[in-house]
Amino acid sequence: MITAHGLTKRYGDRTVVQDLDFTVRPGTVTGFLGPNGAGKSTTMRMLLGLDTPTQGRSTVNGRSYATHPAPLTQVGALLEARSVHPGRSAFNHLMALAHTHGIPRRRVEEVIDLAGLTDAAHRRVKGFSLGMGQRLGVAAALLGDPATVILDEPVNGLDPEGVLWIRTLLTSLTAEGRTVLVSSHLMSEMALTADHLIVVGRGRLLADTTVAELIRSAGGASVRAVTPQPEELRAHLTDPNVTVTVTPTAVHTPTPESRELRIRGVDAAHIGHVAATHAITLHELTPQTVSLEQAFIDLTQESVDHRPHRQHQPTAAAAGADIGAATGAAA
Ligand SMILES: Nc1ncnc2c1ncn2[C@@H]1O[C@H](COP(=O)(O)OP(=O)(O)OP(=O)(O)O)[C@@H](O)[C@H]1O
Image: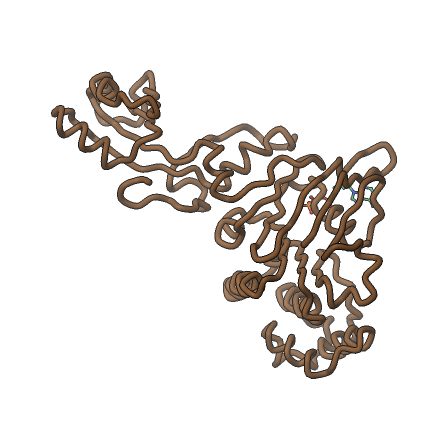
């Protein structure tokens, strides 16, 4: 388990992490998200005792990182900056780390296999690709068989096979009851991997929530209906939990009198049934899901100053990063 209490970091007069409170629990993958410069790496460094907080404190497995007598066996970390001697082989690098904690050679061989580096184990690290370097970093993080794992952008530089490997690895680590905190810029990856999300922007906590709840709060599921009888359809959707928004003009509709309705609180099957019962013509009935990517952009748009302009497209096909993109009737 990881906790942060009022964690704050200032560089000069710039506050880059401000009053962060969160708990990362065992048994789930927690995604750590935020735009560039939001303070993710700084926070991770503070959790690992590599940066001293200006205020506040953090614990890993109940104590501050610095007070763990054998930290490698408590928390394994992969940070963006690698500090591996380029002339050493992967095996020797891991053996050197293992010696500091009395970890046996057998475990070094195990993590080399686990990371898919068996064939490259005795090659010098300076010849490694970015992806192989990431695999070595993950092997080092797992060396001490730690209960808590902190990975900063682990899929960075990995090919599709490597991405799949990380995804499977994270799931198996949490299935073993470990605590896993992982940062990424890839929303599509987080959607597939993380159960819980901590989102920061300009150093502040923006959300501490589940993937499903973040999407729900960004608008959740809706149904797009296109009909030349919009007012009639609306008049028959009378449940107080149902909201219907009608677009004022015929944009992207097949006939001039058609309108697009965005309907929330009821599924496509029910709308289709209502339309059939009242002989209302439908040109389109499409379940829509806000993508995690769109939910993230909505949440963090105040925290970035370099976005050109807002593009809101909560469609099932938007951005290629949707999760739960509905097929057939919406939930
Ligand atoms: N040693 C330092 N001295 C001064 N400023 C720093 C230092 N380290 C980080 N910063 C600043 O703190 C802010 C947060 O940086 P950090 O690397 O933690 O963000 P991040 O969310 O990890 O970003 P990215 O996603 O781009 O890696 C940035 O504006 C960065 O320039």
